[in-house]
Length: 359
Image (cartoon, rainbow, N blue to C red; front, side, top):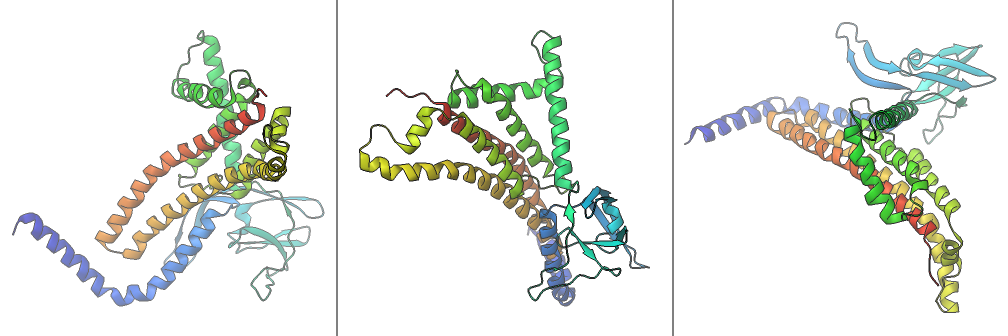
C-alpha cells in the first residue's frame, strides 16, 4: 500500500472516530445550530441600525458583548428624537425620551413604542401590535449608499482633474477606470442609443453602472451590507430607468406602442395593450433580475460558510470552506456582470425611446 493511501485511510479513520465519539452530542446540538444559522441568515439579509462585526460571550458571567459600528437613530414622534443604535443594546435595553419608551426588536430591526419594561404585545399570528414611530434613521444600507456616492464623486472628480491637468491623459487610479468608461461609451451607449443621442444618457449610465458595481462589491465584505439585494433599492433604480425612458420617448416611440404602423387594424387593436404592458414589464424585470441574483448569491455564500459549523470534521468543513471560497470568487464576477446587465438593458430601453423610424 502506498504512503498516500495510508495517509488518506488514517485521516478518514480519525475523522470518522471523532464524529462517532461526539455523535450523540452533535445530534442534540444540530437542531439548535440549524435554527441559529437560519436566524442569522435572515437577520443578515435585512437592513439594520448598525454595522455588526462580531460578538463573544464571557464564560464566567455569560454576558454577550457585541462589536459593531453604531449608526444614528432618528425618530419622529411628537418631534424629532435622536439616539445612537448602541443605546438599544441589540433590543435588550429600553431608551427613554420625553417620558416615552422605545425598544428595538432584534428580529425585524424595527423600533416600537413600549412601556417602561419594554413589553411587546403580540397578535395570535405573532405580529407585534405596538405602535411604531416614524423612522428616518441612517441604517447600514443608507450609510452604504452615502459611502458609495462619496467614492463615486471623488473618483469622477479626480479623473476629470487628471484629464484637465495632463492634456487628456489619465493618471493614478484613473488609468484603471478609464477603459471601463470608454467601454460603456463605445460598446454600450453608442451601439444601443446611437451617435446622435447617446451623450445625454452617458451620465446616468456611468452612475448606474458604478453604483451597482460598488454596492455589489461591498456586499461581499464582512460588513454585511445588502444594498442591491434589497428590493426597495432595485425598485428605485428601475424606476429611474422607467422615468427617463418615458420622458425621452419620441412621437414614433409612442406610436409604435399605441398604434403600430404597417399592421392591419385588428392587429393594431390587439397589439396596443400588449405593447403598453411591455412598457411596465421592462423595468419590472430590471428590478427583479438584480434583486434576485444578488440576494441568491448572499444566501448561497452564507449557507456554505455555515456548513463548516454543521459538519464539524476536517473533511466536511474543509470542503465547505473551499466551496465557499470558490463561490466568493464567482460572486466577484457576478457583481460586475449584474452592473453590466442593468446598464446595457437601460441603454437598450433608452435606444428604443429615441429611435428614429422611416415610415
